[in-house]
Image (cartoon, rainbow, N blue to C red; front, side, top):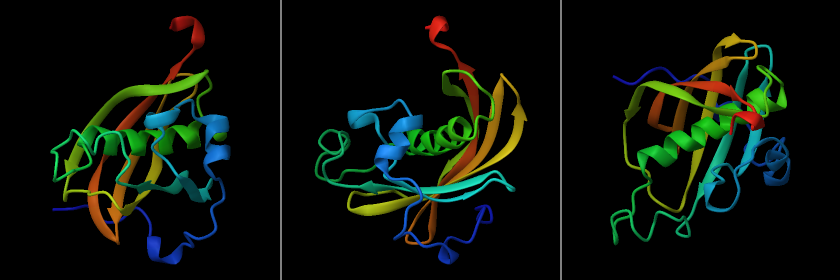
Length: 164
């Protein structure tokens, strides 16, 4: 059974982004085919919640090879989209410090329905736990046309340049 939505997306205006791709790039290091966010449309710092979206097009790097003739957005790319949303929030609002926010783990991930090109994937992330200078835990959900497509929990961990 699917979880309740983290927030009511129907109450948000997707036509007026708070942060566009250029602003996202100021905080997220991913570039080229690894950029999995198009815009951020809502931030609620009191609830530690963020909403953004990814325009999924036929030009995605995975379309050609992930089931040719029937391209499905890979689950790992769905999770990466949600991670980039949580990462933007953690970096923009300096939740845990560090140079980057890296994957620390994922739990309770469920893929509810397939995601195909030519849609807008709406993403929601909400912070559930913070350990300063160590980690941030998020619940996340992805929707297309108001339908829950995937959900789960992730850990973002502090990564510093000298560790790489």
